[in-house]
Image (cartoon, rainbow, N blue to C red; front, side, top):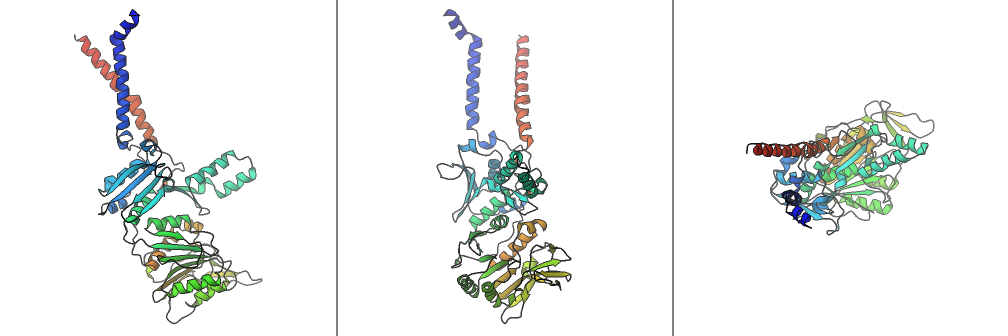
Length: 467
């Protein structure tokens, strides 16, 4: 017993106790430090980087915005790259406040970001800040979807499935992008806008939607994109209607569309080359002097199915400086109509050809229109004789969707302007933190701290030797 008491009273034991208590106190203190102190931004990665355009825009804010980051487990559940990125928004403007909130208490999904002002709010799941683009098919993939494909590739033993997946999702055709800067800044502009323009989307038959990349691009530009389940009426809040006519309209839908246009509506219409004979839709377009051949026809230019063609003098073209890629397009015919101004926006070159599916039919040659704008009073109608396809957009380097955005901007007369923020391509298809993060902490724990302790020991030894 005396030995135990002597041990408890010994200087070495007391020093050990003091060291343990000091380490516990340090752990508690570190846990209470702000997130940006505990996890400094030392990655050196250009992925989570705020663009100059965002900094300029945030510098003009004069209204308050709150960015709420919903996580499970408070700061412990916060992403170590994303949260500092959000905090930079608060650093860039005194009108922005970033707060953490418990996802379960708020009944929100984990890793969700909500941007809100006194006017409105917009919610963005953190996973939507990244996407993968298949340049071969134009398909947009979320990180979860692409991870599922990679898992199938690594686990499948079916050679046919393996070949099919490699054909559709060849790694060389998959590019990864970070859209966080554009999404968050676009959401801030959206929640602060006095009137946020609304784009309504309807696909004939009621099944389908706008291409996800185009939808994201419009939302970044400050639009609200609303998908309609039916066309029994166009909402009064609709500033522009996007109609994807893969099939003909019903008579009731044609009547609704006629009334909408007669009242000064704005319509972006896309059609399918394989089904040009749509009598109900044709009756609506005839009022504006527009029609298409009643037989299937496919446009080529210089013997290619994909071509670049932009001609004409129109506000849409004044704001569009890309080259449009057309795939599976058909021709549009125009006829002079009283009270209607028509402008051909896109056409083939003089070496274009229109191939029909009629037996023994020779292709027609010449220059063919594939996109026409028609104006009658306040009515604005733009007919693009092909789907807004992700594959064509990939071939044009994003120009096709830029053209669609400029078209909607002109039709809706929204006055919105492009912030000039582009999605950032990520060199590696692996969305991971930079290795500099690991290097930083290795330097701290494997070099700095041991060196400091060694130096303290040497100093103490030196001081004792002088006594």
